[in-house]
Length: 97
Length: 97
Image (cartoon, rainbow over all chains, first blue to last red; front, side):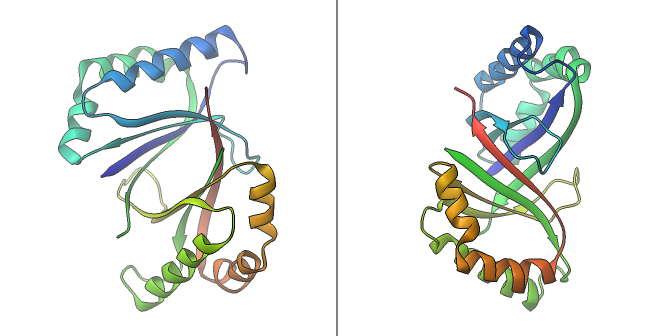
């Protein structure tokens, strides 16, 4: 199982309508086939500069690839992520046995 | 619930005995009271420079604080983490409703 995560900060003011709109659109990605354990979380640590994290799981690389190329994901990246995310770091892991 | 995570890279060669020793010592932190959902994972993405991630959950900030000040954790940080971790980023999150 692959866990895909992205830590990110938005261009929007904290608590703004624009922030809420982005997070609502992001949560729509959970409906893409193959996505499991979808969660959006708020960063509470001062130890990094990201404000949010989104994480999800895929059964295998093929499911992850299908998500990446799914039109709903591609549209979200093009219309929202690239326009509204100020900085991010992706992070893909497989649990050790 | 708070999820505490650290992405990290070691000073050791990948696959080395020293790496295995560090990971075994790290997994011992799961026995500290209050630690839930403890997982060590290997980074598979080329999108960041960390090789591993460790994550765990705490019921609340008091449980997290108790873990931080627990002698087993403090000893691990002093003897192993500070000596063998080349770089890291911590990341503490609370899931959005």
